[in-house]
Image (cartoon, rainbow, N blue to C red; front, side, top):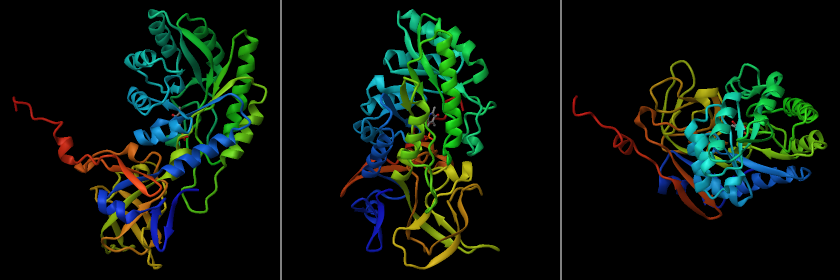
Length: 419
Ligand SMILES: *Cc1c(COP(=O)(O)O)cnc(C)c1O
């Protein structure tokens, strides 16, 4: 459920009419709803009511905007970060260092140092090599870095190949078959406080079954590790819960997910960490855009050319992803169209042969479910600048990320004097 709804034929974000934001901030612009973020945080937390000891660490990569992070920090969330930049954002947004988990296969030495400097709560180590390096850095300071070992359970998450992370051929984690040996080696290092394991098998999961399979394997591993004399106090179950991108589509609810987790982990006796991203932020944002013009098609439907493009919202070009597309002030008439951006490549197509509200030049429309993996993936391709972001709260709103125009980006470039 979200707070983007029509009132008297006009689409609102909470109590703010979207045409007002388009008028005052310009388009394209991402619009987030604070009430929706808070609702999703609450529903996710309530779904896990039967899990006694837990940390919910928002996956910052899904929406790293400082205001969004601040809303979630107030809702009791920590952060899952995958770079030094995200770590700095989480801290800047007010997240407590001990509620920050650092994931990722390629943490550099400098990033590991930063995590130690900031005394973050947990490093999720993705290889023996990384574990040794972190142990060495921590030992040099006379410290022990709190860590979990990320396991690759070789489970097919049944999602898009580019966002599947738990198959043996994916780069993430330590293969389950090597996990016991790796755990034993790393647990013995002076600089590591190896306290458990982590798993994250992919994103936009529409079925709980692969998650349950993966968690089952993790449960067996925890038993084995304990039998081998290791202490296991923490397990990180990652994120991955899918969201409906199409009206009417259903996904496992946080309550169903929570029930499964509570059932599978009942006897583990560990502190659990969760890393939801998309399920919190996805439906809390729309990309508001204006139709530049409608162009007659060659032998197909007309092209509705909008002022947003693949550089602002990459998911359709990158994953062939679907976003519902609705007029802000629908007339009731419908059309079938190809919805495209202005960028000079055919990949800049949001939807093909889409039945949608009839639109004309100058009309406003939204791509829905754009709050996760939207603005965060933006680029300045075609020298279009970076899209602005707005947060709505009841009847007020604020620009929470300025539009960075092509001129500002150009200012960071120079022609060397030897040219
Ligand atoms: C991307 C990512 C997440 C978040 O995934 P969602 O599908 O957005 O919930 C969580 N953990 C890790 C390690 C990730 O890389």
